[in-house]
Image (tube, rainbow, N blue to C red; front, top):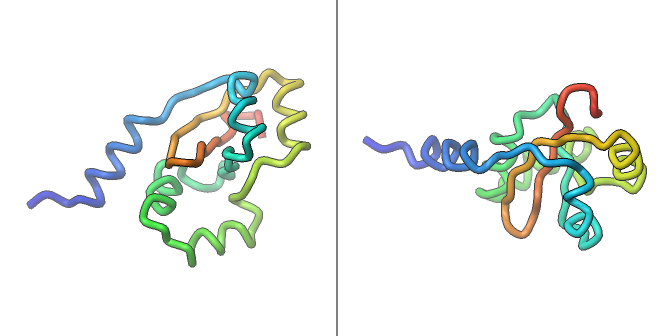
Length: 102
């Protein structure tokens, strides 16, 4: 039996990519970039967004583990020429710092 949840998670996993923050500027400028804390799993976060799990997303937001990228984060990542893991959950682009880019 096919488990659609696992299929959707696998699809999201295949759609992740590393990108330089500098390549993300137009998405940031349009307000479409969301920060995912390193404590969270990027693919699982994207999956929960795709199924609109508002309760869990709200918990992450309250814990400052998820939300819009701040101007301060953007400036820091620009200065460091940071690399981030990315995945799209339309209309959002979720980003997670790689290694020490937090």
